[in-house]
Length: 235
Image (cartoon, rainbow, N blue to C red; front, side, top):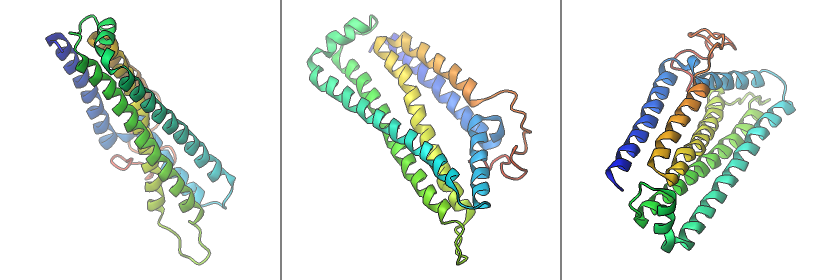
C-alpha cells in the first residue's frame, strides 16, 4: 500500500466516521430532526396503540413484514460471506494479478487485495449478525405484545415491550448500514480513488435519508402525541 492509497483511505474513514458521529449527536439531542429518531418515536407510539386495542391481525402482519425483511437480508448476507470466502480461498495464489488488473495505483502485493476482500467479508458478516439479532427481538416483541393484556392483571411493562421492538429496529438499522458500507469497500477493489468517491456518494445519500426536510414535526414533540418522543428520549 503506497502513500497515496494511505491518504485516500484515511480520508474516506475520516469522512464516514465524522458523519456518523454527527448523526449520533443529532439523535441524542435533536431526535425529531432525524429519520431514525422519528421512526423510533413512531414505534413507541405504535406499541402504545396496539396495547390499547383488542388483539387483532395487525400486530402479526406488521411484525411479520419486519421478520421477513430481516430474515431475507440475513440470508443474503451469509450467502455473500460464503461466496467471498470461496472466491478468496480458491484464488489466493492469483490475488496479486487480480489486484494489479483492477487497481492501477496498487503495488500489486497480494496481502493488499486479501485485506480488501476480508474487509468485505467482515462487513457482510456484521450485517448477518445484526439481522439475526433483529429477527430475535422482533420475535420476542410479538410474544410480548400478545401477552400485554393479561386477564389476571399480570400485564407486562409497556416500556419493556417498546425497548424490545426498538432493539430489533436498532440491529436492523446496523445491518442495513453494513450493506451500504459495502459500496465504498467494494469500490476499493477498483482503487483508492474509487474508495473516496464511494464514501462521498454514500454520505450524500445517507444525508438525504437521515435528515429529512419539511417533516412538519415540531422540534420538541412528536406528531403522534406530546411526551411520546421528546429530545433525548428517542433511542
